Length: 70
Image 1 (cartoon, rainbow, N blue to C red):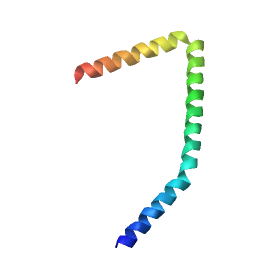
Image 2 (image 1 turned 180 degrees about the horizontal axis):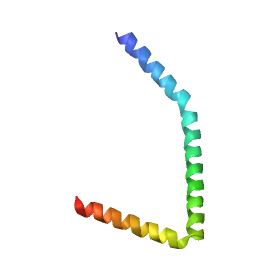
Image 3 (image 1 turned 90 degrees about the vertical axis):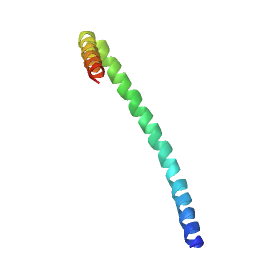
Image 4 (image 1 turned 90 degrees about the horizontal axis):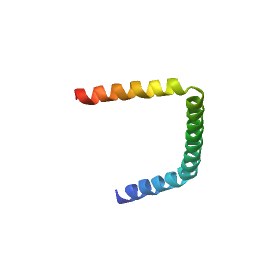
């Protein structure tokens, strides 16, 4: 029983070591996608300021109404 648990622990550690480099790459990919999304949002806000303000007001009213109801 103990040997079986030790084998499971060893295989889990090995799997963790194999996944670590992929996790770092996916984190870098996620950060790049987040930066791209932020840039696109900034460009949209600069191109359409009135629509952006209207959307922010609408979302603020909706959240305020929702919080008030709870």
